[in-house]
Image (tube, rainbow, N blue to C red; front, side):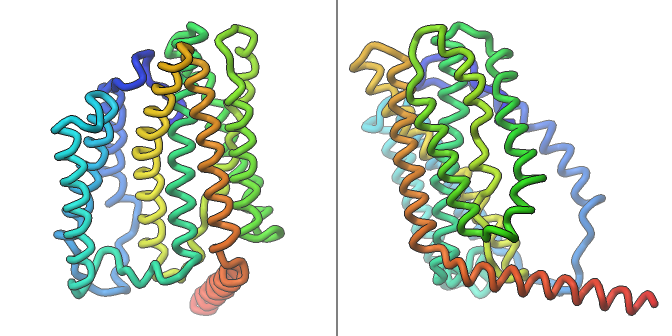
Length: 324
């Protein structure tokens, strides 16, 4: 989906019809999930934290609406203030509910580990940078270089293909050799280099080939933050990482779009505004690198991964013995 750009429009506006693309995809997934994913009955029947799920979903929706409204109407408008206030209030109620319920959707003991906090925090920051990358590159190609929305979308395909190829063929093989922490730092460093490169964009057509080449410079996403958690917590970890990326995308894009619009107003150049947002995004990448370097425990991750490999090997051995 990252290869579908926003249509050329003012930086504060949205094209809500883009979200309709997701509806048929969701419908197909709802049909396939019960048929493809087996029902795990080994853990027994567990209580679902419906109230917590409703609270956190409503809080996230209010936050995204508030940020969107802030971009269009200003962050001092009544609607924006009410939406952001509701997001904070709902989040506080969610925390209180999760601390008192017997089966919380998000056990806060999970965040007692610095490694877990680093993983979620890094994904939050990476989501902000990646969303801005797709958004501003698409707008730059359309509004500055005058390309069509279709060509801008096609130009982003090399970036998406790079992520798929590196995560499939490179990251998994290098992970055992370099370790989780080093791989993540390498990915973030490559992302930072790409942001710096994009910050040099100008309003001239001489940058067309450079943008097309830079569109493939997004391998950092292929080495997203690992959970380094026990198998029993991997569902929780995966949900938190996905949510972190989505929330990071919403908050980060709102922040960077506001910064780009302000800089464009000062300079009168769209390219200058977009380029400045990439410099700010570079700073976000640096913060993520510091977070990972100081908080993510390399030895703990390697120990957990080794334990999981040993457990998986034992499971396969037991299965073979039962068949024999």
